[in-house]
Image (cartoon, rainbow, N blue to C red; front, side, top):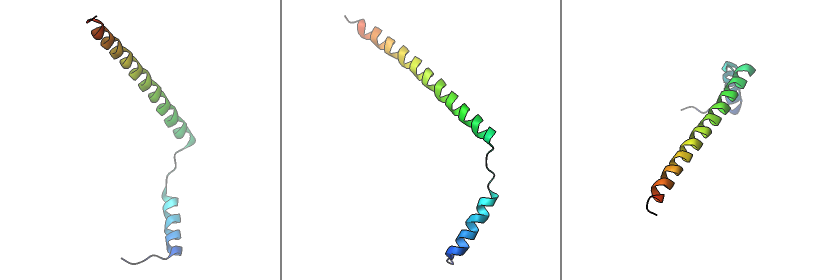
Length: 65
């Protein structure tokens, strides 16, 4: 494999950066809100499942007393 000079490498990097399609501000805000909403929904779901399972375990362990 041939070696690339530092100047050639920088030129190649600049060419690649020009090809990138950056997300718009609207897309970024929408994605951020979606991620935050899904994180809140997942945390509420797991809180409720944990609450239910802990009540079941307390009930089962309370049967022996």
